[in-house]
Length: 200
Image (cartoon, rainbow, N blue to C red; front, side):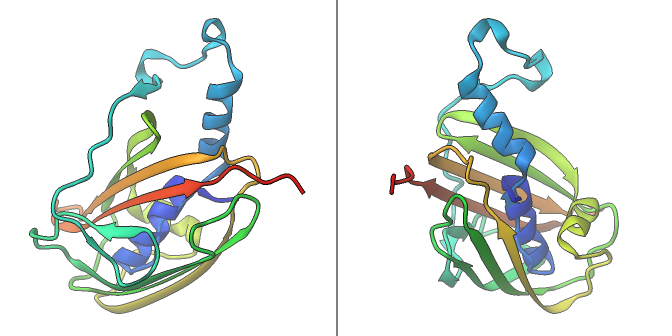
């Protein structure tokens, strides 16, 4: 199964090594499903893991990544170590219950060493699902990429399963990755819409 964090990391990995963030982990899908299935008195979210309702802002200075995907590069006026030249998602948009093929191509200006990290924010409409910092190298190992990520051209191709249980709606993903020395690796932004499933 896929996680929004993974899709993001897949792109970051893809991006970082230009791999690509696989943002569809069952734990995050389950978090959305649980949110809609629980009554307020049954909420299990602690104060450190509350569901927060806010209006998401599109990051400034974005530009689309060439190819067929909803992913954009943000903070394009800032120097970034990763230059994405193409990202393709098949199908685009992703579909619940279907495999998603992700191909990313890019160039890394400098080797990414262990200790790199990524700040990820995932929202379901106005509901914040994830707002967390992850060890980039630990996360990309889950998508078959390892650190150090060598400088130069990187190509990654990955097939991920999108769970049928993904609630329909708009998912907004923002990820910023940094080296262990706080050099900007990349900033990625995407809006992914999952339509209501049609009954057959």
